[in-house]
Length: 159
Image (cartoon, rainbow, N blue to C red; front, side):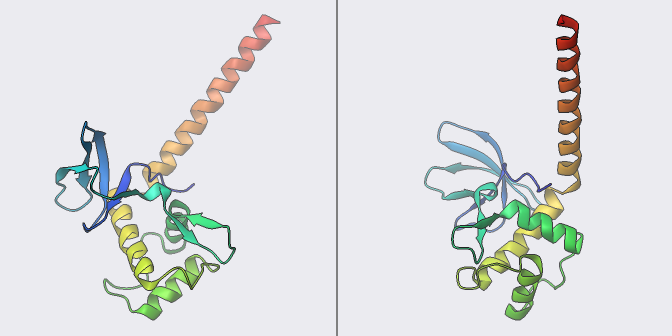
């Protein structure tokens, strides 16, 4: 189950990631996902990208892989620990990317994108976490199962 990135965004020109707190008349209130969380209003002039809407190009011309799925693959393969230090070389990043997503498009996915992916993964792993999403998904499935059972019992009672 990929992680839920609907409330996590990147803002052009600003380092780090931000969690969307709530909308306002002039934009949205965001909180930085850092050791010292700060809040600010991201206005319409700020170019925000929701991580949920970002994908990585693959060799198939029309196919892309959602960022949430790539981060889930990284988490499954490396269990939260990236295989390199804070400033990896270009070759380390290319090797890392080919391990995680073997069919990524080498012409359209640049080393800077790989570096950003590694940085974003570290932030998401530290501040958003993967276990909470897995538990939430299993709770939602359990709730759906209970609703379906209740509906089927109601239908049987009507007969």
